[in-house]
Length: 65
Image (cartoon, rainbow, N blue to C red; front, side):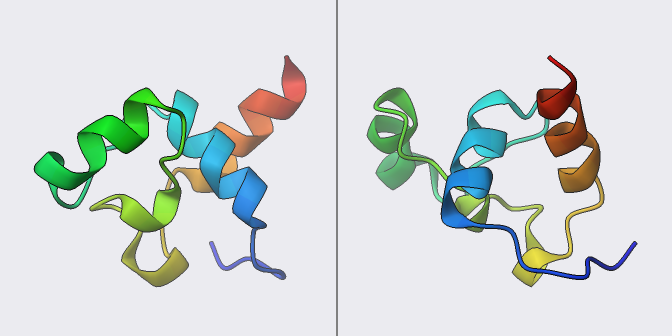
C-alpha cells in the first residue's frame, strides 16, 4: 500500500524499536545502535526504500496504545 507522505525520522526510529520483523542490514555495526535506541527502519533489511509491507500496521498499532 503506497503512502501519501514519507514517514518522519522519529516514526522510523520508534517503529524500528518495536517492530517484530526488524532485522538490521549489517548486524556488527547496528547491534550497539539498536541497544542504544538509535535504530531506524532505514537500517532494516525489509525497508526497501520505504516499501515496507508492515510499517503502517506497526505504526498504527503504536498509535492505538
